[in-house]
Image (cartoon, rainbow, N blue to C red; front, side):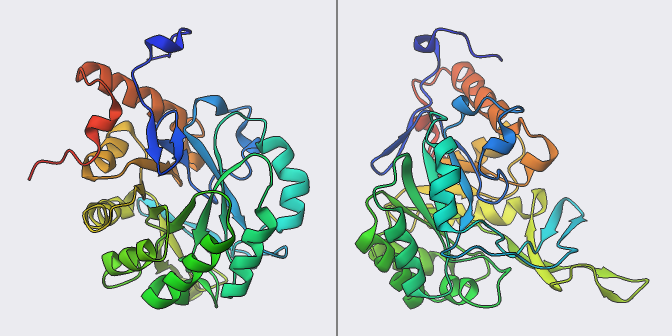
Length: 312
């Protein structure tokens, strides 16, 4: 379905993530949509619920050496290593474009220490056009920082509290699936002041070239994403949504309207589209249209009626 020109005739797709209102529950996941400009000729950016930009660190990062992406059954492994331009260049160059696209921009941030997380959050205070921060405590592609923070409740809470202390926008914390009890981490982060949670980040995996008997990725291990991880992500979103009072944003293997609807019904307030952007750059926009069609067909007054509507 193509949206009509009269916005008043749209189904009500608005959702609230704390104090942040989105025009619809479909966002793009960090690391899969660049800084949005890369997709401007492929997607109507104005139709998205929000854009979460590629992770930003205090100083520029070159990332890991190649090869750093490999296709797997029903997904892909990546070991990009959080390559990015650094916070100062991001503010001076990337935000000029991002603040003009007309949808909420959430900045994903990362660091190797609590002090770094706090400092980058301070650098972003007062920057026009930033609607929120997403704190990456969970990326498995770096050798220090991410894994330790994302898998330990005390450290996850400490990072959250440090960012919240200085941030002037809502703070979303992105959780790692590489833990035995993700709900425990979620509650610790909620108690530390997080405004919302996003999950899941990638699962840790690897691939081997049987001819050379060497790892396919130069980094040996990487993050598994794509349809293969959707059942795990859906289960974790279901568990966490019932463990916390703050909004949950679902991520993991979403590549159709049906996938997105499953996450909403499981308890997610919104979703992020990641690996599917590489396969079909218009997928996020198409999912927005698909959700609108579903809401109309089900004769719902709002997409919010679907959130947590799972019947057990």
